[in-house]
Image (cartoon, rainbow, N blue to C red; front, side):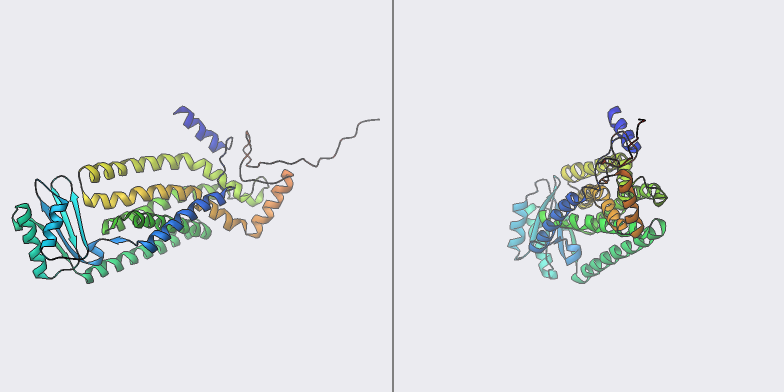
Length: 351
């Protein structure tokens, strides 16, 4: 533990540095690969929407001997065909989800399940959701997501810098897209709890990104007044200074979510917990990655295009006498690497 804290101190002081900004193409390549996989999954399989979004009926039977095959057979014997999802929930429940059914078909399914599992019809938890209500939920979820992004972009533009806001929003869209792609790839159901998880992901990802950007702003407040480091070097130093904090925060956040996912949903069979914790678990990992490897490089790319930053890079390059990198050299607080020979005048000796 002392070694880890010692490493954090060396990273903060610039004595040791990890290259983040200079290897941005590598991180972009990893993200592009996941984005392409997400696009393929969404195109080929699509999202498995829950009945809350598309409408349908849900029947939950509480019994001492739940059987997925028995429940499926009972529903099929009631004459229900087409889309049918049967899942075991915990140790004493089985859930059946169907498409939209008429009242008579719903009653037939309840009677068939009651007879098959030898339970009273009144004990079967039945939920019927119409397609119009599902469309309303979908529309509200999209409005909530779009409104969230607009408010956050305005806040970041006022609190930090406009280009920081752009980089943060790109990272957030990156997180949501990859998380949704993973859902499509493995076929997880998307429910209102999943949407809540997505919104929580956005908040956490932005929090981690804002921590990094606040340090970037501190390091670059008067950067154009000196010629010791470029903007990319200052951003790389800021990421190194905050990476230990980001790692600690992420681990502390992921551990309880993992316990909810694997204990609450896996062992106890709480379906709502699974929908929420699964989105959080995937999103926290992706959000931590983007706040370190995606948002800072994008910000550096946007700012390095400015004439003032280009002039600063030329001054730093001329001062270092060689190619400037975004990684600080060992044992120096100045993040410059790859020094070339200094063009210093030779001192003439006395004849």
